[in-house]
Length: 113
Image (cartoon, rainbow, N blue to C red; front, top):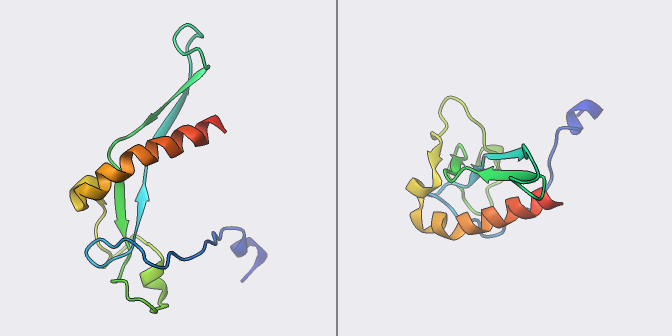
């Protein structure tokens, strides 16, 4: 792989027991808007941040099987033959109610950093 190709990689430790949705690993997309304050009187901290409550779930292209090292069960891609994106609250309402406050906390800490 070229130097340029390696610059676009993300490496992370695999989750040993991933939470599956209908047998698939998945990624989530959370939309956040950070805005500069129009005046210190409106937002004394100088900015504000909004997180959209609809979290998008992007299932991987094939069901997850422990020990399967096929790229399509580990990497999420959009394209022909891939499951359609869905909202987390529709896919797994219990997980949505657990994750939403945690996501809001992560966003708040990230913005402050």
